[in-house]
Amino acid sequence: QVQLVESGGGLVQAGGSLRLSCVASGLSFSTYSMGWFRQAPEKEREFVALISKSGGSTTYVEGVKGRFTISRDNAKNSVYLQMNSLKSEDTAVYYCAALQDKFGRWLSPSYYDNWGQGTQVTVSS
Image 1 (tube, rainbow, N blue to C red):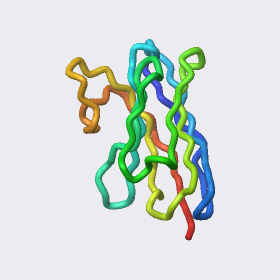
Image 2: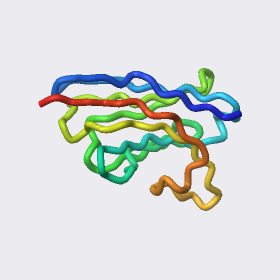
Image 3: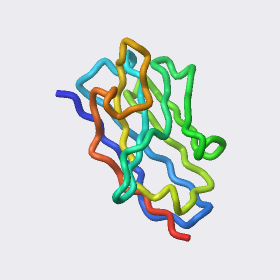
Image 4: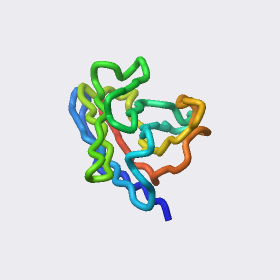
């Protein structure tokens, strides 16, 4: 049984930082690219960041470039999202997801095989 478990969310003031973690089990972690998505109330789930299987390549949505950093530790079956200079518009539930799409697609949530339960991030202004 595949499980992805996020942690590290919370309440932070604007300009602050949080580090999200996601631990995976039940899958061959190093064979999956890993993504972070977020979903604000009454909005669609949106892509935030992606890291390749080896960790050598990363991709970010434009609005978080320079502020967020995705990383992974395959020995710990874990992926992380370091979030700095947080803004109120970053408030959302953040999800990690595992990707193994043979066509190289990554932007839509529909391409991802497994999801965590999410962790709430609230940024107060």
